[in-house]
Amino acid sequence: MPNAYISGTGFYVPPRVVTNDDLREQYGIDTTHEWIVERTGIEERRFADEGVGTAELAQYASEQAIEAAGIAKDDIGMIILASLSPDYCFPGSGVMLGQRLGLCDGDGAKFVPALDVRNQCSGFLYSLGTATSMVKSGQYKHVLVVGSETHSAALDLSTRGRTVSALFGDGAGACIVSATDEDRGVRSWYLGSDGRYAETLCQKVWDIKQRPFIPGDADGVGQVQPEMMWAKMEGRKVFKNAVIRMTESLMRVFSEQGIVRDDVDLFLFHQANLRINQYLADQIGIPPEKLVNNIMRYGNTTAATIPILMAEAERSGKLKPGMKVAMAAFGSGFTWGSAIIDW
Ligand SMILES: CC(C)(COP(=O)(O)OP(=O)(O)OC[C@H]1O[C@@H](n2cnc3c(N)ncnc32)[C@H](O)[C@@H]1OP(=O)(O)O)[C@@H](O)C(=O)NCCC(=O)NCCS
Image (cartoon, rainbow, N blue to C red; front, side, top):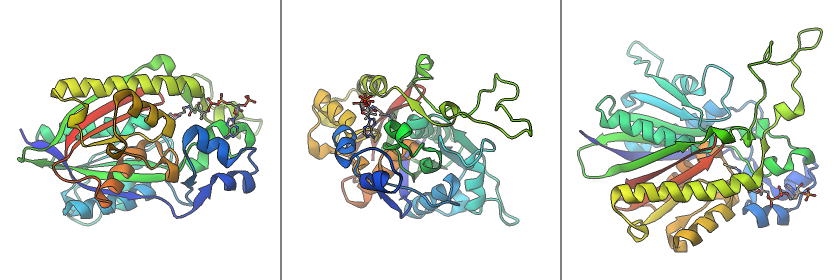
């Protein structure tokens, strides 16, 4: 059975920077830079321009990852795209990414399978686990895994929505999970979920139990009320559960691998809140030089946080071959996961 390793990484964030002061001055949100930084660590985020969507952001990150892996686009056996902000209700953005990458063009087109993963902030780790299994089983040699989000289109950018809208930003991160006979790669991964908290952090938009699923006016024009349209979140419950579940899932993969904290060279945590990650670091005893964060610059990009962090860490030289890397994420669902990778 081959090992599955990450052969290339890439990331893309849109060029438009939106600072905390911009939220107040441009969008009229009653907030302050100090409030947001003190509670979350976020100083700025990126917003994509109108006309740009999730498959497009994913394309730019994927092209980098493909180049970094030293493979051709046609070498990709499967696409896995994680997003809570897909371009449309259906089909998923994975098929659009395949088309954008040119995988449906020409006589030799392979029309590779494209899977969308709907696991919010844990989406990347769910996708990585799936890709690893696909590669280890021998089914595919190279799987493209992407986390991509266009949050800015679906945030309530008003004072009413400030608790949620201050947190999120747009971006995409990608990697290629490849087969190798070398003694390296994804050693272990663990995933979990608890649907009792499905409504603690959610954006419903519609309710399929209703007939029709979105109420309409006399002309048949859908009417979505603000409480359905925008994300709602019980922030403190999310915070508390994030700390518990991320710690637990890290301990799971540690014990499965027979390793301890000091064996890990670099921790890549989901970027939901700097305070969550600092709390985790204190609990577990992680020295600052082994933990990288970028939430200050990008906010929470949900499924894209870990692959963006990974690509940045590689480019800055903080993530090097031979390192043992631990990842953990938690998000809406609730869902969570962790992974250990020998880079
Ligand atoms: C969201 C979060 C920062 C809020 O911090 P908090 O200390 O729990 O704050 P609260 O929600 O209790 O709100 C406290 C007050 O600040 C206000 N407030 C909320 N957002 C604000 C903002 N952006 N600017 C200014 N004030 C804000 C609230 O309206 C509330 O005012 P009130 O006391 O007059 O009612 C925090 O709960 C958190 O980070 N939770 C985890 C969220 C997360 O990780 N989500 C993604 C999961 S993947």
